[in-house]
Amino acid sequence: MHSRRASDPAQNPPAPPLPLNLAKTAFLLDFDGTLVDIAPTPDAVTVAPGLTETLQRLRAVTGDAVAIISGRTIEEIDQFLPHIVYAISGEHGAAFREAPDAAITHLDLPSPPPEWLRQARQFGAMHEGSIIEPKKNGLVLHYRNCPDAAAVFERFAREITADHTDFYVQPAKMAWEIRSKGVDKGKALRRIMSLPKFRDKLPIFVGDDKTDIDGVHAAQAMGGKGYLIPEDFATSDIFRAWLRHCAEMRP
Ligand SMILES: O=P(O)(O)OC[C@H]1O[C@H](O[C@H]2O[C@H](CO)[C@@H](O)[C@H](O)[C@H]2O)[C@H](O)[C@@H](O)[C@@H]1O
Image (cartoon, rainbow, N blue to C red; front, top):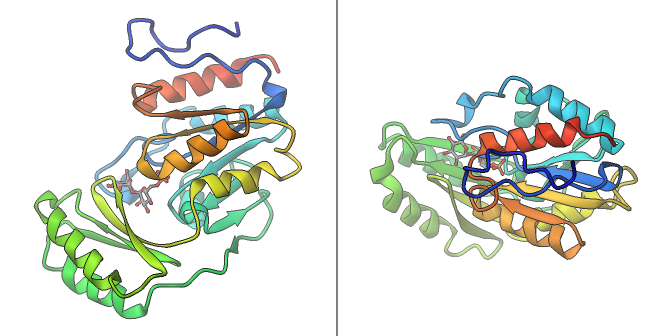
């Protein structure tokens, strides 16, 4: 059972081995591109049939050690998976909800000047299909539906942040994200792993994007596993099948 591969052996790469001891394992999972497939717009993602049940079963077999670590706000994650996992970190580690009924807390980080959002919206209005996504500590310029605007969006983001050392421009999937410095998914993972439900367990972190690499490294540094899509799981669908196999294991 423990060495069973969850995907079809013909798939390349084969999914990683299932964890040896679920009672001693914590799952910390990225959202977009991992738990859900990438969609044309942030609002258009869909939760695959059975995913909610898989996450609930994983909570049961791990003693609640299941978390999401996302670039999205926690409020947005709640729209798709309302209070399904035990803990959530949003906005790349700037926001936390450390138990399902706990309040959302935010790290003390700078918010972008309000004129950035106004300017970004004016700029976005010139590129049909673009989406400007505000966050508490940054904003995202999405160009998935106007890919020719990628370079001008990058220039815009770099120009408005040029004199602000608290912010930087992060390349994302068909988007440029203006983020405040000082947070990343590795720090978020370490904080969640210090919670009573998670400590003394080995983390498994799974993500799909550049912002997930800090989470991968943090999980590995704690003696756990860090996996990426498509390097370790060819697709998010294959990852979800693997997760379902984990949830079906006996604790
Ligand atoms: O850390 P994640 O949970 O992976 O979130 C990363 C960003 O995801 C969202 O944008 C991306 O997914 C959208 C839906 O599939 C897609 O339309 C967009 O092109 C992607 O960039 C989200 O909107 C961002 O706030 C997250 O930071």
